[in-house]
Image (cartoon, rainbow, N blue to C red; front, side):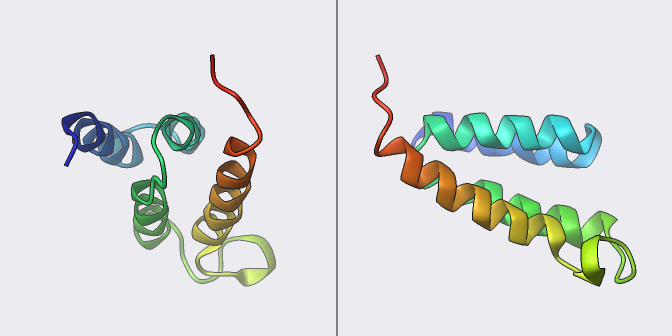
Length: 87
């Protein structure tokens, strides 16, 4: 496994535990663009929902709201990476 991917996963894990949600989402989006199929962001979105969300919180009383939104964002990023050329 690539050492950069392991270190980025550790950074994202620390950001989920200690940083505000918007900073963790920003880091996760950037890492999704850098690495191919960055499933660690999805796993940590599930961790975020498990740690900080209650069953009554969220939009339409969805328990794993951040996880579902991160799946949608992950799919959109993966589809857009095929159309974007990085220089």
